Length: 609
Image (cartoon, rainbow, N blue to C red; front, side, top):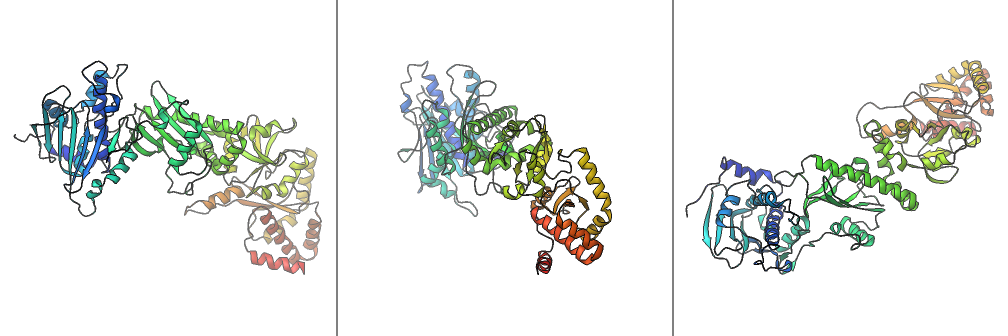
């Protein structure tokens, strides 16, 4: 029979389909199995109205075999098969899909199957690994079979052939190995089995290699709660995502409507070793009718929920023609929005009902929620803020901000917090004393991003956040403020001397209205705080160093202040030394190393002697 040319604009189109549309050669098996599954779906659907179809569900199968000696792979199915005309139409015309036509004809029928194929180009991925492909097919109800043969862009032939039963056998003649490409790996049935498990594990019909059924067929997320317990889901999570702990939360979604999808999503307790590294790739596994489309679809998760793991399966996704890349469309956004709300709801439920589990989760992933609050200028702050937790000094445990406010006395106007490297350091700062003395609770905020969080939130309910480092803690009477201002003015020369003695390390020196037991403390002026300075220093940027304008605050009621005044009047060198010691002491209490630790140690030794 004379060779026919492909009915497209040019051979270049086919060449592009074979070499450019698919980026991963192993995808060919997924595409051929999907086509075989569609063929079986069509015959199974026909059996509902055609009594001549005697095959039962248990009879249908897809068989894959590899022959290393002859370098061939065969993919066989006992589905509906194709006539010579259908071979011509479906394989001779690129991008014409018989499955798509079937969907258009039967898509609205109540019992219509979920056909996978749509574009009619998946079959041509076989040429990525093959020098020649044959398709032997016999349509159900026909007496004769036909064989389609092609070596690629040079065209194809269709000839009569012999085949006992309806169905299709695709034979791939695998290319010889070449530099940089080992095609022979596809002739290993163990390797083919791994590809079935990876891409086609949930095809609804048995996929058999070497006499063994390789695929699971019915995925766990497609089963009802009565069939699959939470324990079963947890076991699936630990096996699939290599975690030795049960998940903190399990979310099952069965959504129907504008976009239908099923999902099984897990909230982990433990943190992957690379979670906060650039190499970590977030995302949910994405399936379409049981066929894996993407290993990690990051578009399904907002970045602040990037810790979530699981699977999403939908028949309504708009895929590109290679089914390798998901198009950014309305369906995807609807699914992502639904998942976002469900994750938030599950986290809140865990916080309210399983506090110990939530605290374990929060220890590992709370920082991610905080990043979500400050991202995009606080666009999601109201959505995420009730998931925050901080250590309460009075309650001596982690509490939500709601729980902090519930315990506030009526006279308390602010949510007081102390930033620092850890709980002990933050709550041990001299600035906490007046808040504690007033009988108010203090939240310890130990992440360098926390002051950005409170800055974005500004308030919670009708209560504003107030750092213990703020100039005005809202605790002083007007009389006390006036007294401090008077002392400030009376000691102006001394304060200027202390500032000069510090050689530019302090932007200002002033009388404190916060100190009780301690002689000095360090605060800042301007928008950048000490904790923000530490945060910026931790970022891998090469720009100009961002620093806070430091303010040394002195306690006029402390004995050392009296010593300082006396030295200022009688021994300027000693006064300068005391100023440096007070500043270094304040640095250490603020969690900062002195600029010159050796000089500080020598100065301490001098006065200890």
